[in-house]
Image (tube, rainbow, N blue to C red; front, side, top):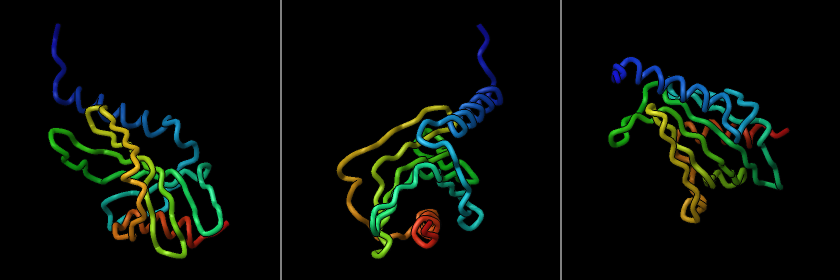
Length: 136
């Protein structure tokens, strides 16, 4: 049996990422809402947006322009469910899915992630602006 070349393995990783991005069950209507300094594209699943008073929740996806090295893997996508307290400039992630170039995914959901945090990262600020400032 022949082993795949690095190019073949890389292409399989790209195809797996593409299919996960296009057919992921969490989202059905991904809308690009911004790009953080040319580094990370940010998308929101507009079908998942839920509003309750001052709070907004939605699934979001971050695609770094260059895969980020995490241990022995290359991170190519972060999909997460985020909730925002619009009047307080705060957010929390209730679930996160990390997707790697190799096709591996890690899904995290824990009570520890559910604490409210001040928005610092640019991709999170982009989501906040889209979800909280553009009320529908």
